[in-house]
View (cartoon, rainbow, N blue to C red):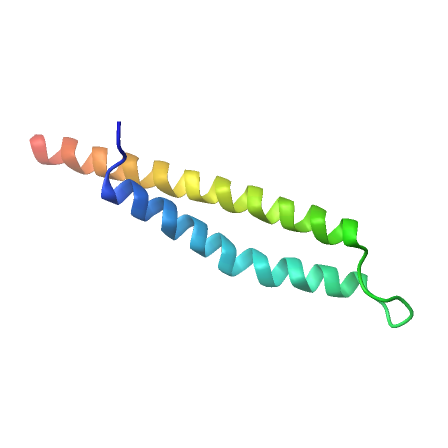
Length: 81
């Protein structure tokens, strides 16, 4: 079964909005972890934060797709009545 265009659009919009919010926040958190005495955040910190960002973006995309599919179904049901 192929998802409809509205479902894909909802997933893309959810993912893009999550990226636009999370990437600057994640970068700021890693920069705050760095002090003038250190040489920046540890490599492990970068890996963990970016894995978390990818997971949250995937979840936001799934939620956006589900919301779009639900909204489409509700609109179709309302139009039938």
